[in-house]
Length: 205
Image (cartoon, rainbow, N blue to C red; front, top):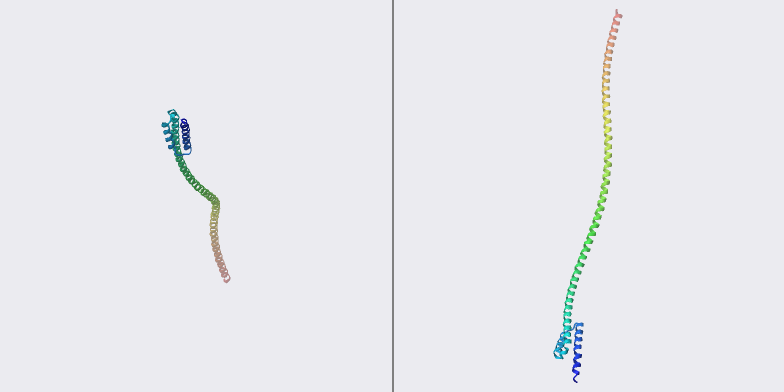
């Protein structure tokens, strides 16, 4: 009968230690197990103190590990919150980048369209310049022809003026000759009249 309590002590302490470990693994309350172990540490045989002290240290270490695990869990949760916030910010930045990309692509399309319009306008301007240069060449040729025609007209006018002067001189000479012929005719008429008068006088005599 005297051994039975000792065997009970041998069974209770390991059960308390195992229950404490199970409670830790299941995140259950461990204070009650720790208190019971401390009570048995005082009550039972002092030869068991070393084992009990080791069990107590194991309990303390387990509690510390649990506290550290909870602290690590809190830290991990905070890190998760920060990561989620960073993810939200990254998604927002990605959305803004997509909008900026869309705007940039739209601006690029508009720039390409404007470039096409500018190139078309440049082609039209070059064509108009070529037309203007051809028109200028034709105008210069026409001007040269007009100047040539004017020169020819001036020469023809000079020749006409010279011909007019010659005609005027010839006319003056003709008029002078005509005047001389008229005077000669008048003199001849007068001579004929005088001759006829003299003949008539001779016949009357």
